[in-house]
Length: 640
Image 1 (spheres, rainbow, N blue to C red):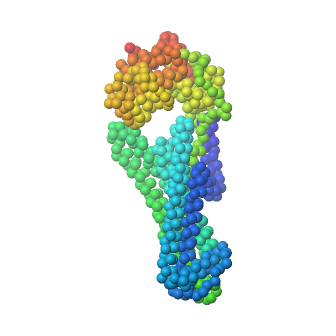
Image 2: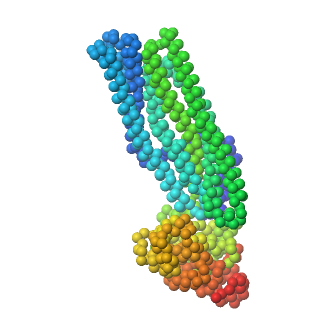
Image 3: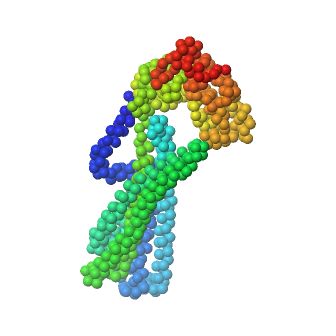
């Protein structure tokens, strides 16, 4: 059986294991990063055709790039008149750079012989222009199709996070700041796009470019290329060291940014209290401390990331200079068949490898930064749902008999909130839950639609454990009005019809009339099409509550859960709404949580809760006659 306590115990045990085997965790961090990177790439799979097209156009770019670089040798031969005017035999075909260069020499020799050097020069320039056109044509379409992959993958990641946010239990958010959750679906997802998915273009293009260019270089001079391969790993080693440091600081940056977003969100929500308690200076100081800490860490990240470009530039210069020195010795010493023109072509191609190698190394920095954000994203996606549905749940679309709490226990952490609750609610009955704040009334109601699951015991509906039912079907039987009016930044109509499809305007108006909301709605500028602002801030507290009641009335559920549903209404509105609710509840099973006992005098049964236990139960008159806790509560309130 699931319980929040067992889940938290498992989390604490796992936390202890992390500390106990710290060395092992550090050792496995690289493998974890690879898994996170591989998991991000799974979001690319649906766009495989775009990836294939990207590959095709990248190959087009590489081919025309090599072709344009190969023209350097005959161009130099033509300029310096080294051997281009001598007769050259047509070479036999081989898949190598030598064949390409020899064939171009053969072609240029014939062209010069037949038409002269000026015509040959014009021809080379035209061919170069065409080659560069197709090279950039390929680059554009490679980026064009990769954009579909990058944007589509980010869309799917954001969708999965939002869907996960919807199904995670309320207990998850009791341990999370809203700003931190918002940061993960916005800032962290954006960081993954910039750092990892943008690098996909390099991941496909740069290795191919390097491989084909190296093949070309090997064909020109195997000895020189082997020398290049021996000195490059040293540069890669230095780049890797800085990348590890960047990943660690990047995760801290995202965490601190999430904390700042939480502070801003709390400030906007609690601005009335901040001003009322003269806490502006306190809030400024708190935010400034967080802002300074975030800035300090972010500065370090930028410095390390910005270090990649000049560092790789300097390392590239060192490598090129060493290659020039080694290649020059080979030519001057006669230790190689490579000619001066071939060597120039070799250096040109090698210099073009430096650019994708630099991009690849800089991309490695960004990937490390993106992995930190990916870890935060997967913390949401991998969070335990706790409220799980059975493989073959029972479907239900009507309520027939009764709801029964059987020896129900529930706890947050170690402390029991509900202790041995036994209660039978017959269909059509009105049951009221009253008692001191923190006594477990709202928790008891929240267990019924499975916002939480019981830790011990069970709750049955028509004889079946509610955990056996399909969750959406179970909640479809219930209409809920909470103590805090939950409204959305939408029209009045859409707030009342929230979650329902194909609702007629007449039905919405009828529900609003029952909830005593129609009159004030019609007085608004656009009536039912009026936007009510964020969380209904354009309405008064009583108006917001009446819209929430209208929403529950429109759903027309067989079970109503009213958690302090009339607490925000003035006396006149309360009477009207209470009268309307009384008519609505006649044909329904209702669970009403109330502090204002005037609203539940006619309940079929009143349950008095104290410290998570049922201490009294009965009708209003019976409980008054007992002279117990309920009598004391009524004495503190006046009845009209």
